[in-house]
Amino acid sequence: MEYLVDLGVDSSLLSSVEKDFLDANGYLILGKIMQPADLAAVCLKIEELMRIEGQQAGSELLDSPYIRHPKEAGADRLADLVNKGAIFDLFYTNARVLSAVSHVLGKDIKLSSLNYRAALPGKGEQNLHVDWHETVDPGDYKVCNTIWLLDDFTTTNGATRMVPGTHKGGRLPQEVLKDPAAPHPKQRLLQAPAGTVAVFNSHIWHGGTRNLTDRPRRSIHSYFCRRDQPQQVDQLRYIRQETRDRLSAAAQYLLAV
Image 1 (cartoon, rainbow, N blue to C red):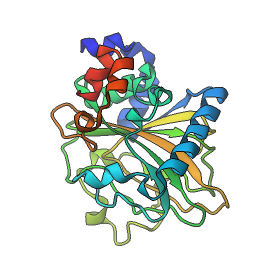
Image 2 (image 1 turned 60 degrees about the vertical axis):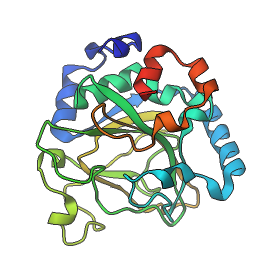
Image 3 (image 1 turned 120 degrees about the horizontal axis):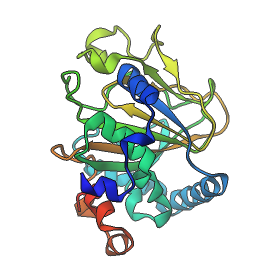
Image 4 (image 1 turned 30 degrees about the vertical axis):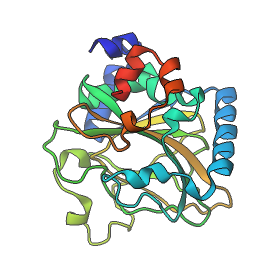
């Protein structure tokens, strides 16, 4: 689609090896995309927003009928980051990330939500789950997520686990597993340094693990869907004039506003 071209998206931004890995496994580590200075600035902005919003942090998710547990007890949340500063524009307009997302969903996509999640010390574990309410046929994918690592993801701080290939199985984990919270014999832990971005087909079985450290494990999720599907957060409802004023026509179209 023309708007993706305007945002610099090109199929050549992913190698054939990367595309094959994403197709087969359902996820792909894209490498370090955030520079250290940008990473530091984003973390400072997140701290500021958490102070300002307090108990209301993440409240925009309460309006979404597509999120089962918007106020997650084991994690800090922020939502609607699209409208909370130009510093967050990178998270949904990066050409390499959009190239990976459009490889999964096709070229007719839109941003579904842009949220922050931090697994708190001693908490953060999740059942294996998918980010869709029902099974889909292989290739008929509705949603695709990205994780922007604000901290190193390690074996001890609540990194995300993935079960490769499960996006093609046509089964939901709660239908198959006796205990979706238990470790899966085929799971792989996303381990990478801060500044890295990972993309994953949201129909893959995945979930956060417990943060065993004394510090929050922070990340931002830019979540995308096909244009024929509802957004997790209604971007048109929340869009602010100052946001419109700074964004290109292509970026606004990606938001479906």
